Image 1 (cartoon, helix red, strand yellow):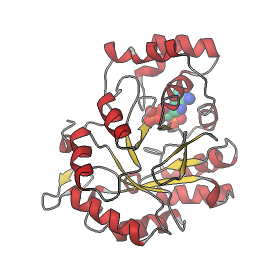
Image 2 (cartoon, protein in one colour; image 1 turned 180 degrees about the vertical axis):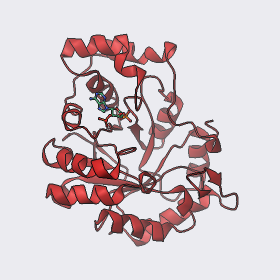
Image 3 (cartoon, protein in one colour; image 1 turned 30 degrees about the vertical axis):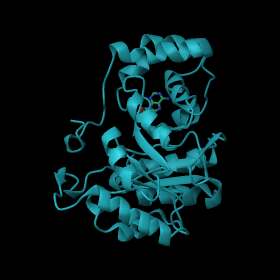
Image 4 (cartoon, protein in one colour; image 1 turned 90 degrees about the vertical axis):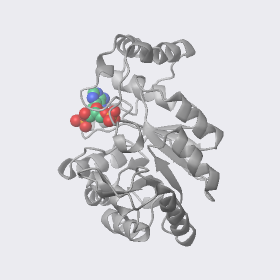
Length: 287
Ligand code: A2P
């Protein structure tokens, strides 16, 4: 929890953060409080789309941990591409914080109604990035870094051709059954840190009972989840966001191990026989 990677802004981003996608407001407040106060987390990830920013903010308050001592990320919602400054103010107000460390474009997909997935065809996400750059330049006191999420290689290429600010981070779904090596490589080439979401494979993941994962977990006497999180954390320029609302898991998920190169290779081999993607929306060509 104390190890960090350096962003292209010079800021340090802790390698392991608490994920909160699907963490209900009623549970996430206690989860955030526990993570910060008891489990030593220094990094919390949320999004306007998760509908839990207010509860996350309450968890932060309840922890009593000073704001400067941890890293906080939130994301621009798909229906806010035209009101970028307002969306930032809304997130700050919901989180009850003076600033966020990282603000991501959640998807390169402007929408009229995110709950229905209705695309807003009038808008181009590239213009949204330009608005985010502008808001970032004018509000450094409120946003310390900007980045993207769910960007595949063609999207990154289009962005990087015109970007004045290179994204600090690309947050994507990454686990042994979805290595996305080409996105990882393209991001690395541009100096963009890659953050893994759904590192366990999300709910009811087959990875938690994968024979290779079980074997390695047994060797180190840790939970299978700790192997999957370690597998991300060990990669260069990688940060990882295990999600849990269960205190015992929040705690054990930061109990990381140093995998050998042979074990890393064995875990990489999982994608030869088991491939799945949790988030595959059609509107970004990932359907
Ligand atoms: P819960 O939040 O109820 O504890 P991911 O991070 O890949 O999105 O996975 C999140 C899912 O994995 C949630 O269902 C979460 O359940 C579960 N989970 C989190 N930590 C562990 C763990 N250590 N062992 C088993 N399941 C876990």
